[in-house]
Image (tube, rainbow, N blue to C red; front, top):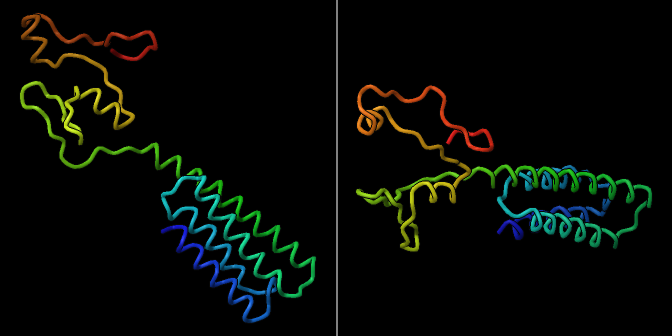
Length: 173
């Protein structure tokens, strides 16, 4: 859908530039700059697909307007300007996409066993809660004992240690 809506908007602007016979001298280039920047943040698509969309928009526009006579210096200026905006849009999109893919949110209902606390996935398989959360987020676990369990296991005269045990990476275990 992103491909089609972006291409239709770009074709509309190219058509206006052709109909008015202003070609590369058209003031509608501002609309092209905006399309490139808006698309860079609007669609959650892979950077590769986004780059393909931008190149397609860019190519169709220069192909259509090549049928109109124009000064080569103006055409070169518009080409370079649009290319710079396209490159900026590609980098912005890649940055936004990488940020969006880093954010993984667990949401909705998680079927969890009342006894063993395993979680059932969409395929019906049961997973230990720590493994399920690790696979669906960037969360890591550290194991410790709550106050009640420390008392149950070690008796009332043992308290939870002030400094958790560290693993080889220096992280609490």
